[in-house]
Length: 241
Image 1 (cartoon, one colour):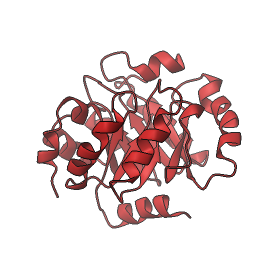
Image 2 (cartoon, one colour):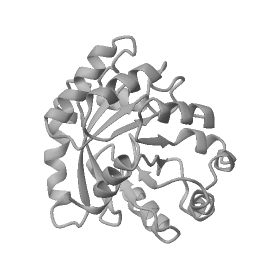
Image 3 (cartoon, helix red, strand yellow):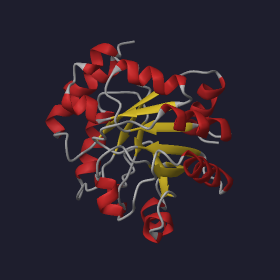
């Protein structure tokens, strides 16, 4: 078991709440990274995720290199495509979009990624990724050409998450999508958590400290926040150590 996943598992066992800040290279200029990470380092963040649905070229590597200059936090790739893989990061969420039925995002992209991953030192963490309806169309939905799971169909979400675990995924990720109007419902989080024996990640639509607290209380082991910080960096003030 490698260090990032081992740390996540240990934190869950010790009931420690984990917080990842998602940086989308398409929305973060390299010359803005240092000031952003300065605020992030003073917050309760435990991980930095880097990625987006439509990032191009070498932008990801440039952003990751700059981030690594300013923090000791683990930097984990959250890639929308194989062109976002860089050995400059510490690990990668090897995401399989198990909520959809587009074979490219179930296994196709992963096969293509192997040639990029071979020879790197990235810690690869198999992750079952579920897109949940957060009230508006997301970039993930458009790019993957898959529909999100409806929040009213709790059993379908629970069964899909459990199927991911039984397939060997080390993490399950419930995602309402960047800029979601609503985060994943608390009852959905709670019911999924009851079924799982692996850590649960929840992201999308979380914009306040109260929402964050409620998501943790409902069973999330690691929460991902992105848009809230993109829109208002003062949110860091609410999450200081």
